[in-house]
Amino acid sequence: MAKSAEEGARYILTIFQRHNTRKNGTVLMNNLTLPFAQDGWTMADLEAGLPYGVEKGWYTIGKDSKFVTLTEAGTVEAPVGYVAWGRE
Image (cartoon, rainbow, N blue to C red; front, side, top):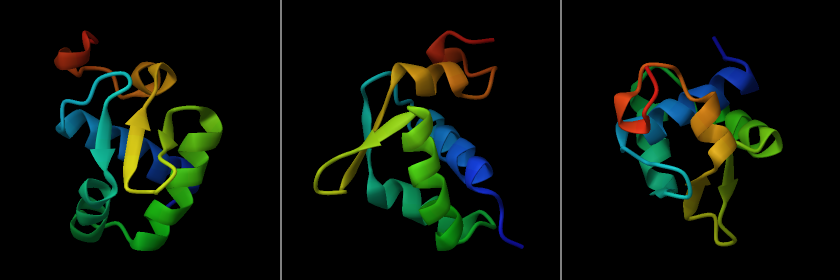
């Protein structure tokens, strides 16, 4: 079952966390596609979540679409409890 665009965008934030990405840090687009293919998500979920998160200001997508950059708003919106970001 397809998930909402918001759920996809929030899942992207958890992937940033897995990579210990901090504000203004980047991940390769490939680092997003693999988890979406393996963790019970679909590529359609990723394709819906990416623009939703950009619209919310949680991350930006590089001009060549190879990198996604986490913003301060994204670090604030990330799930609570991620100690590496100083949130508990």
